Length: 239
Image (tube, rainbow, N blue to C red):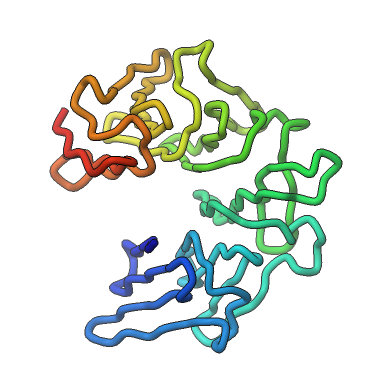
């Protein structure tokens, strides 16, 4: 299984794999990184290139960062980061957000970690994050953060948390978050795609033409066409 991350600010394309480490393609040159090169594990699920050009890699054994020369284990000094990082996001202020499973909390829990460049802070259900593992994260044009969980969706607006779930008309298991040019959120869930204009969730389901109701990724291309990856194939959708 292969996951790929490309940086809009760099010609390099980074590719992560399940079991074979990760690689970077820069023009015609390809370089491979594995545990022999400093990775803590060859099982890599997500990649992020931050504004400084550093690469963050979520592996099944911890979080790694590459500064262009060496790989470093991040958060090892703090016991709570020894969980499994699953999703990565950099916000407009340069903070790095990491969704982690199996945190060493009293609930043996889940949550998100925020790194401001100096220290880590944990946010979980006590702060207002909806219960369940965080599967997706996104930031909208207003700087609000969105967290997709097993139950639904949580929004962080400044210091104010708000959650949305089935009672609000949203399908369970949010796996992907995207924002279109009009500020509408497109949410991939395990029960189809839901568009959210801030007021109402509008579903787009298999009965509407999706290849699958189990959605894992949503991407809008430059022409405004949506590419929706699901459990049974890829759907091309033109609004």
